[in-house]
Amino acid sequence: MKPRRATPSRPGSAEHIADQLPRRRRRLGLALMAVGVVGLSMQSLSEWLLPYNLASLNTVRELTGSPLLSAQQLVWGWALLCLVLLATMAQARRPPLLLPPLAGLALGSVHAAAGGGAASLALLLLVGVASLGWHAGRQGGLALLLATALASTGWEWVVSDFPSLWAVAPVLVTVFVWIDLMHMRVNDRRLFGALAERDDLIKSLDQRTAELTALQGARTQLLASISHDLRQPLQAVRLYAEALQAADAPSAAQPLQQLDPEVTTALARRSELLRQQMRAADDATAMLDQFSEFSAIEQGALQSRPELVELRDILEAVAASLQATQSPAQLRLSVHGRRQWVYTDRTQLARLVQNLAGNAVRYSVGLRRGRPARVVLAVRPHTHGGLQGLAIDIVDNGRGIPPDKLEAVFEPYVQLADGSDGVAAGASRGGRGLGLAIVRGLATQLKLQVAPLKSRVGHGTRFRVRVPAELRRAGPGVAGLTPGLGTDAAGGPAADASRLDGWLLALLDDEAAPRSALRAALEGAGATIVDAGALDQLKLQLDEEPRFPDALVVDHDLGIGKPDGVAAVLELRAEWELMVPAVVVTGRVAALGSITLPKRCSLLSKPVALATLVATLRRLQRPAGTGAVDIPVDADGA
Image (cartoon, rainbow, N blue to C red):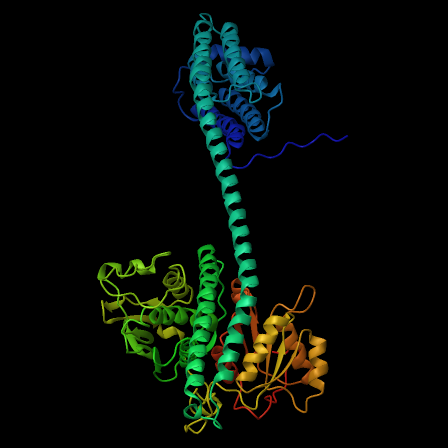
């Protein structure tokens, strides 16, 4: 059975330092001794600085039988022997048992090599000082010191007529051993004890950090699971409400004025209840979005996918989704500014604008009786720091923010209490005070700047987000632009931008309830729907249609073990050899930044407002009725 290898200690730990420190001291001490040996030998090149006893040289000549041996030859031969032994000790991880005594005996021979007791005493003092801190048996410092003292004393007895080192050497050795035991080792024990306590503290902190990381991961996974599971019923609730609202709308054949007054009143009441239902679903969705996004921002897990984005499209889509939750008598939303193109993440920028605009609507609606709230979304050129960038402004006529709260509103979990500024509160507020904190995090992620707030209590607030000049891009040619909502290609009045009359849409979702709700909502907008719960079923049903669909609406999660929505879009495009526009919807908000989309494909988070979905489809597709755009796709469908 092979012996188990010792686990290497972590660099910087108490165990590692306790193992390395004596070794480093030994190498440093041996280097100091080598310098001393060379220094004593250098005396032979000129006049001897220390007293030189010729009797030592004569004794060596007699012992070696070399009458012609010179002092220079003797001292440099001795130096070479000592340097070889010292270098061998320095290279060894743990010196052999006999090596330190041999090196000590060689060093102690300095009395004979350098000619006198002065050199012996000087080298003994040097060895004593240099060996402090590594006297332990496995390092060999004590054996080296004792052998040096013994050899120095012995050579003096042999060579000198009046030996005196025998009385001094034991005292010096005793002093050095005492210093090593009572000072060096005691201080080392204190140091290693403190380092061990530090290591225990670090281990404890690492363990706590790992526990917190695991807890954070479990919390994130729980939030993602809860968010995904709750978005499905919220999606169905909102889309059913929009479908009912569209069904209750008066037709051209029977205007509102021809209906019975009681029926008109009932319809108005029902429409208002449906709006409240959609508003409640939107509030619940906003809370889910806020918790998920703020968690991703806190962990630094937010990823951006920059693309060419038209700012006015985003403002119009946000305005349409918010206007759908309020009647025109309660809220008037308007969008201003020319079309401007930037290179940024569409989904994250839309969320930023949605949070700001939603905050403006929330604190404005219902504030003034008999008068609608006014919210303006605008994009305009803006010069900042001498560079021509853009500014996205969200202006409302709401309650305003007190001057001492202008910075606090961007902190997490901060909400202005009702009546805190002497102004009556507006409509019920959703969320948990994370909306503006998310705005700041998204702005940092997208390299945007949130300008200082401007607000007057009782009059309204202006939020401004600066888009730096380096993010601006030149838009595509005028002929290639998708007509803006509310205008046709020629610039004249277009069909209702909230309708999809004449569109053929393919809908793929493995869950029946959300699919049924989305189908009802899209059919209420005038589209013809072909829906299925699996890709193969959708292909069979589409084979019976006389033309290709104008767009695809696909859920991203199509069941365990099945291709996701993006893969389904690519497969259909490759099979048809057409670049069919597609919208992928998902309930996993945290995954928005990690999903790679092909060309002419947008990603929306559940629950999707019908107005947002319609605006996205119209942006991806040219005017309805022309069928899919006949653009060949490459091998990966991009």
